[in-house]
Image (cartoon, rainbow, N blue to C red; front, side, top):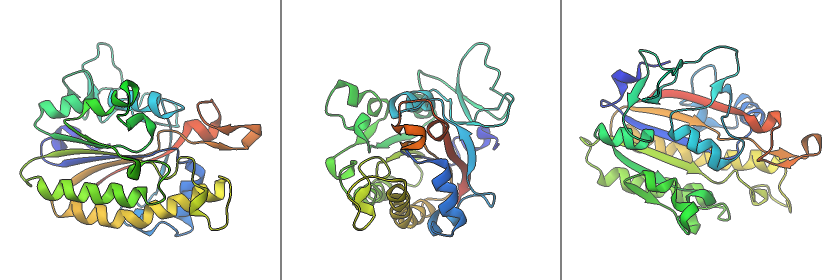
Length: 265
């Protein structure tokens, strides 16, 4: 684990949730060399296998923004990169950055960060009170149907918007950038030529599409200096596994997620 007290204030921070990405699919495609832009930045050990605190987007992200990121699958108490003031927390250590406020977004704003949300799935759509709960934590938030689950070009649009924001933000201004990648969430059949329904194969094809767009993001971040990055899934999803389809259910492929943290510079 990095000493976050040395990173907060000196680095930009990127937090990407690859919404609905299964760990087994993420690991297999990385091993097969089908994710070159992710392979270029992930640790040599690849994806870390972790457990999500929630089995669907809304629950998982509330936990994330409270400082409870996916936890290692091994038993024990695991230190957290970020935490809020919380009496009795056993996962807060000398390497944890303890922030003020009701969520870590607010806490990073107190530390001088400009906080930006690039929404993806429906819980970020800002179309109703529920869809505003998570985006309202940020000073700047964006969502449109172009960024959502029904647009096959959603990741391209999300990255293009991110590039615009980074270009207009002074390099002296630290940024906390959150992106909820929507492409993996159903529907994803259109990433697999000839497919009519979502399958684990189209899920993998969606991840390959996402990877194809990430090189532009890495380049934009490198223009600003060093960035501390967290990439993870919020939950997986089932495609007929043991008779289950979808998520918001407790199944190993739903609660087991890929995770990585690294410094891009």
